[in-house]
Amino acid sequence: MGYIQEARENHVKKKVEEALRSKMKQKALKECDQYASKYAQCALGRTLSVVWACRELAKELNGCLHQYTSDTVLEEMKREYVLQQDGKASAGV
Image (cartoon, rainbow, N blue to C red; front, side, top):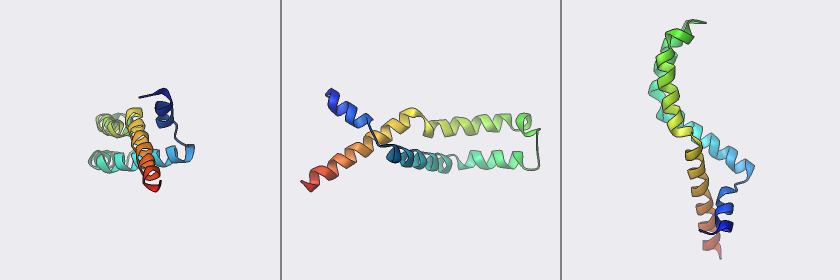
């Protein structure tokens, strides 16, 4: 892959990147819903004690969310977006 092609794939407009981040977060929350529900149940009715009482559940939730919200996932979504846009441009020619 040439330098120009690689630079083009890595460059995505700010608004598009924000939309991709939002989509990524929505997917993460959907995929990790069971962990979020368990954590919410644990946190219900607690104030400061939630920090230590729900620590393990918080770690599980964060671990799950990280699988779907890492920089690697975002870069892959950007790459797919650029390829999709290139496909649309090619079809329009």
